[in-house]
Length: 392
Ligand code: NIG
Ligand code: FE
Image 1: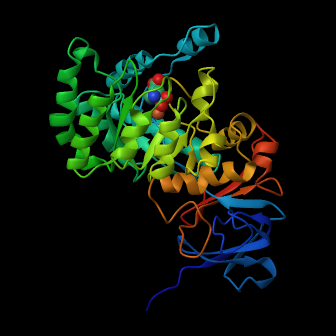
Image 2: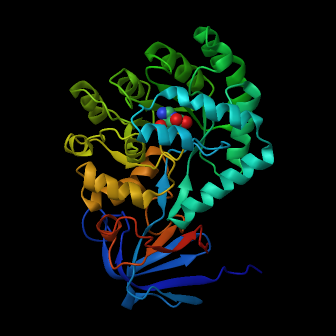
Image 3: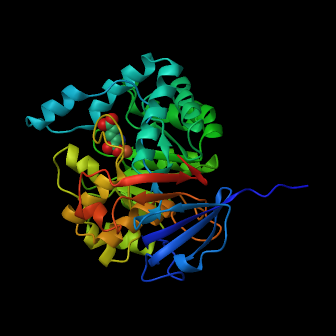
């Protein structure tokens, strides 16, 4: 005999973002006075609240809005320590540079597995409380074969979306031999790390890896079955975005300094442009031009880029507000980018939407509409989060 899982209806949702245009109004598939039925870990039904089928349990949303759980496609959570002094110095005028990563590498190498596990768990829980139900996690603060494999194993205990970022910066031991470090990353380090990761990433930037080095890293990763994503065009113009498109990367991340050629490449390719406004906020830099990308037809995702150096926030609502205020996005576009856009950047079809068959990941907002995420910046609006059907 099989026992059916109890079903739950969330009723009286003032505005529901489904991200399924066939279910409601506009690109967000908005349904007013909506209900959602959860069966086990999946969404079973969505529609008007008055038409909700009978269920075992019922939760009254009391006129709140509901959105798909945020999909954060870019984070660096396996690290120890923080960089408060560097932030302080930056806010007194010192510029951000890729080299600060070394400080965190030293702290991370010295930390125990338990400390790193606890840190990741804390930041994932912090993001969850702010509505994030899917998070990608990168390595990149180990930079030896052993330390990178350790970071990936720890990340994999917290998410399925694990990214090998051995090419975050040239390891300090190879300061005089960057080519030797690229050989390590594309050889023995990749051997140790590929089994633990789905994705491969590289920081293609002045002070990190140039276009040829980035190509070597991503190509070696592809040969081992990893899918590329690229830290591209963050601090300066460069070859990262075009390389990402050429190699079929799932995402080009940052996209702050773009030429017309870069924008055209993104518009013609399959690569999502993932914008990380927390980094510009925390490095006091010019924001990427989301409007230009959207007008060119590029698919845009948003992520907080949580890391101790350039963007120490796990808050997707904060990024939605920045994207609207500073980057020319409408509230609808920013909410889509933080949910469905993130899912595209991770090539996932089961998350980023609230429609039948999707994983039951949703956030209830203490507000009548998703627009309040930008309209009421800094206010903790996320009042309940379901992850895989469980109220967390
Ligand atoms: O996405 N750009 C490279 N990686 C991070 C910064 C890491 C750090 O400063 O520790 C980023 O901004
Ligand atoms: Fe990053």
